[in-house]
Length: 219
Image (cartoon, rainbow, N blue to C red; front, side, top):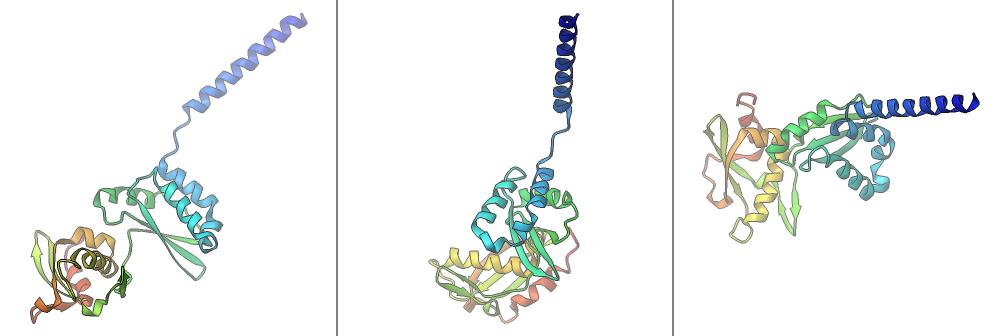
């Protein structure tokens, strides 16, 4: 009798184990976005004080963003009134824009964080790169309508065949800072770079570009 009872118990335990395994298998998979925010929330204090271990924190955030989309990058903003901004960016690559939107939309309420999709406008600032300096006050542009967007000719001081690629990279950073990532990629069409000495009399200062772009319909 005891032997039979023991067999019954073993059968029940085995059956329960199979049921639990089936239940675990049938559980809905966690999306990459949900997994990222679960990690972010659990790591909130460390991320908020990222300056204490900047390199390791940046590496961890990048690693956890990759399952969402390999094209995503991020920025931490300064602390204002007890909150820090976390910016999700596609680094100007339009094919990664949907991933930015999905991740931002999936963000849960986070007590000390403001989640921002796409690099926002910050206003122009002096860019220094590889020994070159580009002051936004020295940059001008002319614009033209272009299939619902704005085509630009941007005039850069010291532009030569040798400095073209570097100054163009620096100028793109300026455009992002003036217009924000989303408007730069969705409202600006073709861009031509020319030396500042070729600027016509009606060329406008870079500070006027946002007003030109803001006249376009929202996209």
